[in-house]
Image (cartoon, rainbow, N blue to C red; front, side, top):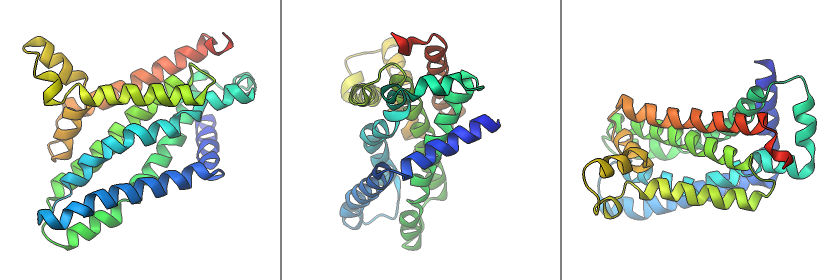
Length: 239
């Protein structure tokens, strides 16, 4: 556990020791608040549902920018070999890096609280929607970061890792949209809805804490981390 915490702290410091963290936070907060409040007063409804609906679409682009460097940068600089020769397990390295970037995600989410407090102060916002929205935000962010970390472990090129993560994330969102799943019916439609992130996110963000939706996000998070560990154990990066 000590190794995991040490690696997590190192990763979190690495973000704030470079412009990445500050650019990410500024872009995310400015864009999402501008998009939300540009419609908020026109709609005339005290609700954060539209706010949370915007988050996964921004995550599709911004989170791959965080995860792309996790392993690709280590391999490019040659520090990965040194890291894996230390007395730490591959699992500890993967979990430590993931906790580091997840900590940054949590900081980002915390910085959205002033917006939530502002909206709540303007009327009777549904507390269930707010809690569900934050749960959906954190869980979906963790899953996308876990996938991004896995992709980053496959290449030494950060741009390649970024693009692959973005493409996969968009596919996950698009699969569950009506105009994509409409041509399908029966089992195929159910399969598309199951693998798509959008219906699971939508249910949770409405305040409906369905256990199956939580399992979806956590299950895929652990799955991508498991594959990340397997990549390191196979020493695929040497190829």
